[in-house]
Amino acid sequence: MVLLGTIAAPLADFVANRSAAVIVAAGLAAVSVLAVVLNVLRQLLFKNPNEPPMVFHWVPFIGNTIMYGIDPYKFFFSCREKYGDVFTFILLGKKTTVCLGTKGNDFILNGKLKDVNAEEIYSSLTTPVFGTDVVYDCPNAKLMEQKKFVKFGLTSEALRSYVPLIADEVLDYIKCATAFKGPKGTANIPPAMAEITIFTASRSLQGKEVRDKFDSSFADLYHDLDMGFTPINFMLPWAPLPHNRKRDFAQRKMAQTYMDIIRARREGGEKRDSMDMIWNLMDCVYKNGTPVPDKEIAHMMIALLMAGQHSSSSTSSWIMLRLASRPEIMEELYEEQVRILGADLPPLTYEDLQRLPLNSQVVRETLRIHAPIHSIMRKVKSPMPVAGTPYVIPTSHVLLAAPGVSSRTPEHFPKPAHWDPHRWDGDGEAALLKPEDDGEKVDYGYGLVSKGASSPYLPFGAGRHRCIGEQFAYVQLGTITATMVREFKFRNLRGREGVVETDYSSLFSRPMNPAVIEWERRTKSARRE
Image (cartoon, rainbow, N blue to C red):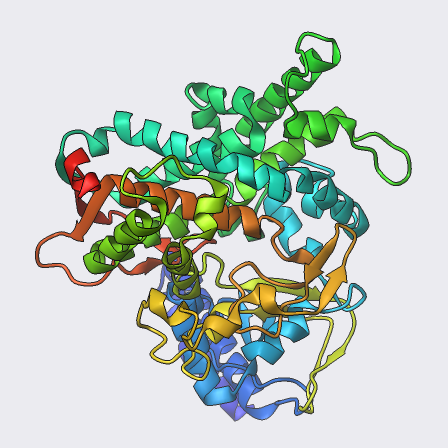
């Protein structure tokens, strides 16, 4: 009682002589301090030996979010050094367990449906952008059927037909783009490559009718829809923020555009002169006998347009920036084309790309260091024991795989921070690490795919949610690279070495903007020499 009186007297005096605002502020400060103290004590005194170690943090809910968000890879490697390959951190109030290394990748990415779930993690983010009843807004079995439908545009025959289309789009762009006017100049690479990748992807995967719309209002709608992929929408996808209102309007407008195309075709207003993705989806039927509804076709077309754009845009930007930082590699690429394809450099074909090993290796090496997605998450649905440890991951946790960590470790790639396309040479140390060489195949409902999670090189993920557009990405990036090499010489601005830092502020890793390089057009006489 004496103690309470000792505390109460000065407290009462403080309250009596302060304004309401000061009292409220002091109360909030006291509650905040108490929350921090209790949070620290809980971490120090109540450790669970059956769960992975918790990364220390001061503030509840915020936890380690800021450190993770600034530089995920720096955070992962720092935690790995302290806690090992398996640890838990707080990401916006959620206990997120990270499993690193090839074993960690396999544990999460090849997890069984009864144990892990991707839909609960990503649906709130993707559904407002793609639309309902597709991708993560439907049962996994239905998603696997949708992937099978879309594979129409990813066959070898389709990929073969895309190469000249992609090359033509690149050439048309660099003829008209302000950034590449004249014989030489400077260009901010990220926005230029974003336009090139969306034009090439729409022309190849979606067809001429859709591509033509990108010359008008469709491009603005795409931009507004793209703004829906912001980190805050993981938590507040419904928030009445300006970018969300624009996202929702763009989604409705874009979906209606696709549905108008479908309706016109069904009514006979369009002749089926050639097969494209929309015609293909109009012919598709689910296993239960239900034809794919027009609304779902529209939403799948949006998903197809959006899904790979960030990856290709980011990767193609990094390729150009790396070539500018290493002009001798760009010259090797040019000489490779002249030597193998001929001094006249005929129009590129799919077969030509297969004959240009260094061109492919530039793409692979860039994806190794600059994988567009640094974190792949799954919701834990049943307790999951971690082999070789006493840990059991409870259902209250989220799992996080970071395949990019494996591709940045010296045990798999000597001098991992060094960008060296020649490490993928036939006798190079990385040549045997190509994921397609992994012999184990699994059919998740959309055809046999490589299980692949045992490889330290997984830029397209693994398991049932492995990116089905992997081969398209290699074709698209390879064609863009080969075409740009034919047309330009790149170099860094005077006084700059290396490449810009990575921007992790969005959900996708990308170059810091601006990222300006110097360019010079190759002359026709130089091509013949």
